[in-house]
Length: 97
Image (cartoon, rainbow, N blue to C red; front, side):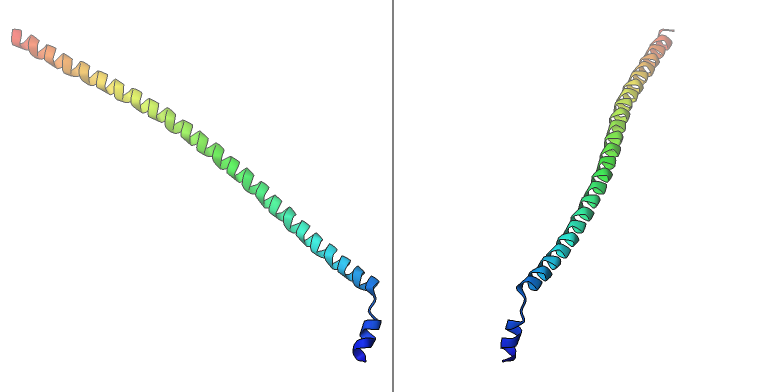
């Protein structure tokens, strides 16, 4: 009979209101979580963009330094060839005396 009494005192409107209230609470928590995730995502996107810009800057610097290095190597070769050519000329000149 106790079971029958609880069934009779069951109020579907109250139960529906409780379920809807609980559902709204869960929706609010989920909305907060989604907002937090989006905020973190935006932060990480900004962080990644900054890193990408830094990587691009460093890559450009490496390319510039590589071309400078190649130019300096060519200049060293040119100087070395001139010096070795001058030595041969000097040696030839000395032999002629």
